[in-house]
Length: 154
Image (cartoon, rainbow, N blue to C red; front, side, top):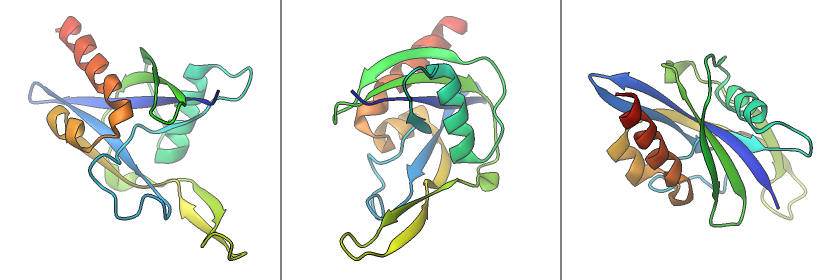
């Protein structure tokens, strides 16, 4: 079973939480907006620690160092069967400074041509209500768990 780990970054502005979501790059996600935004995440290899993977993968996708203690948000099985382990991290960052790593795939399929695409093509801060509308539905439980965590803190 495929497993991945990721981070739901958040910041507090004017007493309200905003979350950072990323839009996946590449041809499969081009033109998709509502329901496509996600947390930065990556696959966990055998023997790897989920927290370390979440931190590494989020930093690779964002191109920005992340600092602070991760708050566990638990696991959730996505629609495709992959299990995602989520963490929250409070950190403000400038989305204009985001520079994603890249991946290569054969595109168009069967063409024999290999093309390079950014792993994410956009990062944006959303209010929690906006995030609920824009986020990949199978990752929304992390948003709910973050709201529960923040309610306990305040």
